[in-house]
Image 1 (cartoon, rainbow, N blue to C red):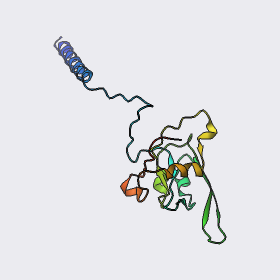
Image 2: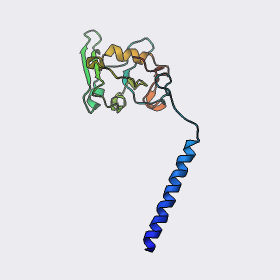
Image 3: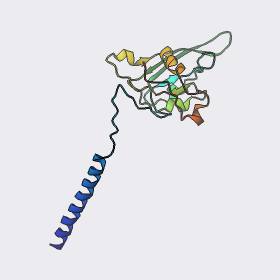
Image 4: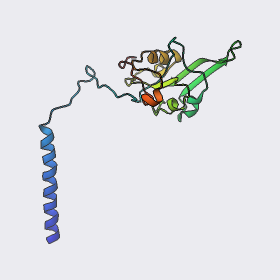
Length: 169
C-alpha cells in the first residue's frame, strides 16, 4: 500500500510539472511563419539541391572527373563527357541530377576536389511532372550562378553550401 501511495504522488507531481510547462508555453510569444508568404532564412550549409558552380568568366568549374557520381550512394548523377582533341581536356556534355532519387546527403559535394559543386538553399522542389525533377547541366549551373555568397573555398568557410537568394525554380 505504501508503494502504491508513493507511485500515486509521483504521478501527480509529474502531471503538475507537465501542466506547468504547458502553461508557461501558452503565454510565450508565438513563432508562426505564414508560409509561403513568409519564409525562414535557411542557414548557410543547408542541404538543398546540389548545384554546379562557375568561375568568374561564367565557365563551369566541373572537369568531368566523375568523382561526384561515384560518391553518390543512390546513383542519381549521370555524367557524360568527351575529350577535346586540341586541349586534351575532358569537356562536360551531360550532367543530370535526378532529384527524385537524391538524398541531399552532400557526399557528391564533399567528393569534388575542384569545388565545382555546392549545396544550395533550394528546397521547394515539389512538382507533378516527374521528368521535370531531373535537373540538367544548364539548370544546375543557372541556380549556381545566382549565388549571393562567395563560391570560393566553400569547404572551409561555408560548410559546402551557398545561398542563392531564395527558392526560385
